[in-house]
Image 1 (cartoon, rainbow, N blue to C red):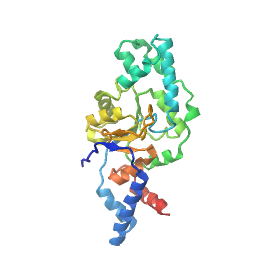
Image 2: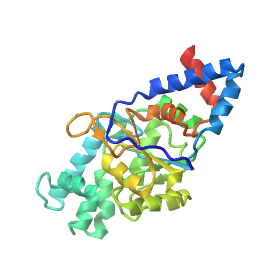
Image 3: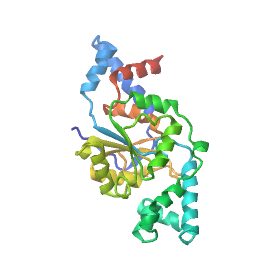
Image 4: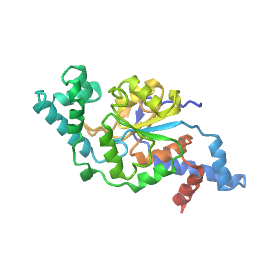
Length: 285
């Protein structure tokens, strides 16, 4: 499989739409120069591409963006549980989240939550008004329908929460399945074991066969260490609002909708070639 250089450091200023337009323009120019059809040009492009066998999508703040409203609702519920039910100091839950990748993992590692209460915690934490901030996304659905590579949702949260998000987005029928924190043995996405477990579930053994979209730089750092290609979804940090500067992302896009343009620009063969012609025609119409 072809390897790609990883930028270091990399500013989150990629404009995937412009990259797609430029790539399509170059393909058209070559086709005209050789008297080829648009379809022949697309076929030539396909032979020069790289294919991952699986695409993993994070759920929250990756498949959708809502200024962290849902994430903030969950954070408030976690804070409530840890203060009222566990007697922790206010703010301690978020400290655990920053240190361990999830508050739940921190509670487990520091012996603050009994195993018998894990499901209680997950149910309470994700009992939020999803429908207030997550809406149907026809553009996302159309993009996912154009994909030909198997795709999974890989989340550090609970399956029932991710399922509800997918239903509201209108894409719950378009994934092979949901890989949640239970499915990977309660490991977080800071841990290489979570990625290996996800690969086992998806039926792949070579890390280079995997590409991963997530909004967390620390998660992408761990994924890269395992050997996955990664894509940061989001250009500004949740806590500060500042532009993200990182050496740990192979690619950066503002929203998941730019993934198709990124793939076409970088030769990742995840979308049907016939659809590339339709997208190209729409751009130049």
